[in-house]
Amino acid sequence: MILSFYSKSEYSVNRKERVLQKMFMMQSADRIFKRGDILIPKRNLDKWAVVACDQFSSDIPYWEDVEKIAGEYPSAFKLIIPEAYLGFADIGKETVRINKTMDYYLNAGVFSELKDSFVYTERSLCSGKVRKGLLGLLDLEAYDWREGSDTPVRATEGTIESRLPARVSIRKNAPLEIPHIIVFINDIPGDIISDDDSYETVYDIELMKNGGSVRGKRVEGDKAKELEEKIAALYTEKGQIVFAIGDGNHSLAAAKAHWEEKKKSLGDDRAKEDPARYALVELENIHDPGVVFEPIHRVIFNTDASAFVKEFEKYCLGLQGRNYIVTAASGKDKLELTVPSLSYGALIENCESFCRDYALSRGGRIDYIHGDPEALEFASVPGNAGLILPGMEKEELFSSAAAFGPFPKKSFSVGLGADKRYYLESRKLK
Image 1 (cartoon, rainbow, N blue to C red):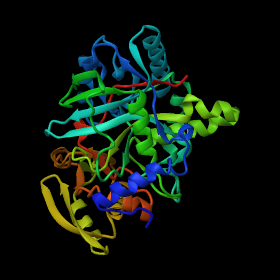
Image 2: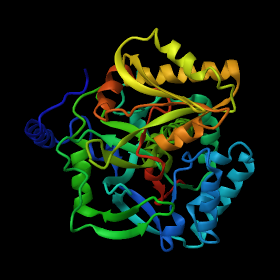
Image 3: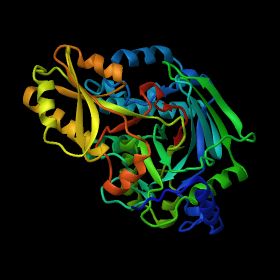
Image 4: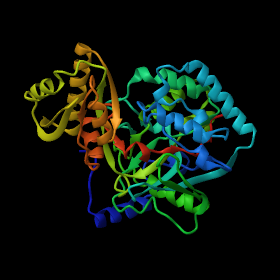
């Protein structure tokens, strides 16, 4: 297996040795994760910050409420297309509107710019847990989403390539990027992404719609350089996963696809520092107590649900592997089943395959729902049906991705819907 696990003391000794080796396989100018010029809105951040566009995808009232809260204020809501609207929005017109709004915000002085900096974040969740992060630039040259990749930055979920062209088109013409991408590192001691009294607080706000709160601090100068060196020292051998994508997989893949196309027209010198080579992401330690993996459930809407539970029970009889507990629900019918699967990824693939085949034969639309109560509520509606999945042990992410490749799409979520990253910081792409 590519990834090795050490005890805390062994890991600390090994890391010190690696730092003394002056960042094996990388030079300072070629670091995979580095500082950048980050934009922060100057005021009314409580109106600006909204949750990632792929959340609450079957809850239009949620997004209507967000629109009311944002009102006439500058807001990230006006720079996104919520997935809940994709069935009836004119994507072409919305993209033009978004790009014009980005230009307007840039010219109207909406942002302050933190030059050559990281932003250290502390997200206080409604559960009381705190999730720490570090916002910076990820080098797309070190990333490949395809199966069989041995790059240091790797996808952990399958990428649906048909979803990329529209996203690439949006990024190609956008003057800004506003990220919700989360990338994990495997920092067992947990001392890389941590607070420091010298960091300057640049925002501290309550988030709308039960999102908790978030505080951001600027990291610059020698402190930022020290962080770059610690992160670079995690890379010790070719083929190792150092950065695992935790959220925003398709957004990062679109950024990569756009960069691969753009760099064809650039010389080597220009390509090194072109803004499109990098993506603004939040780095998190997978061992952070505030990082909680939640399952993403499958619900079929508007189907003939009469045989759903019995057919799933029958489907599970032919499976093998370790046991996972899955609840099949349809209207008033609910049955907890033991589902054998070779791995958590195989469990997701089995459940996805069953739902896909069922929808094909009996009609309906599959959606991916966060939260056990929410999924059960949707599945209990007559004409709907769903599978309520167990959570994944987060320690399985790096080892399973190294051994088996990316998980199937929509395998896990970093927290529930309201816990997802809110759009707040941004960066110029031109």
